[in-house]
Image (tube, rainbow, N blue to C red; front, side, top):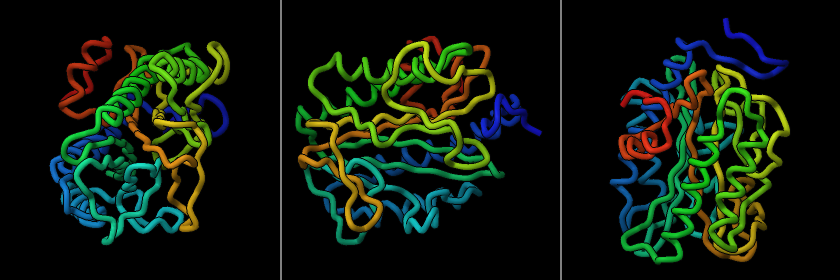
Length: 274
């Protein structure tokens, strides 16, 4: 049985963290497959089909499909869509688009959740930069996940990494979350905050760290479909996410992909096992 740091905060044993890493590998492999499949002419529903096929072939279940009625196995958010884009046959990617792909899987009762933003063909320099800013901010948040740190330290690290890079919008209405035997658990993880404030991090906590960064303002709105969130000014947005375990040795990236190996080493994080 898992322990609790306080009511509603689920802590995992090393054996349970290993199971979450197994679920995270399914997500990582699926995102690698989807990145390779992104091209002009493919629809977001095509990508969803590829994702579901890969997740189920690995013996896992897509955690997004049916979640509060969501119809897809991935969230596919294109250009000004920030998060929660519904995969559609008529949403066909074009050269110069960017797409954020958020993917989740359940394996043996444990969840993995991760997101990447990918350019379709050649990226506009401004799009490439907002993608770099967002991914760097995610890694800053991950690196702050040390035993004894606080939730405010994570949010502060993310927000500082964004603000140092220029006038970008750090979306505040959505954020990261606890993860384990459910996809969304306590605590909520803000992408902004004050250092030294908030819940103290202890070994066994598992959190999804996921900044969303806009090329314009941080203001967003939800479309009438009840899911898709877009930038209010119509400018493009990037989204990156990893599921991460707090351990005595440092943060372990549970959804790490091979392409993350150098970054994990550079940050001095524990090897998650590739």
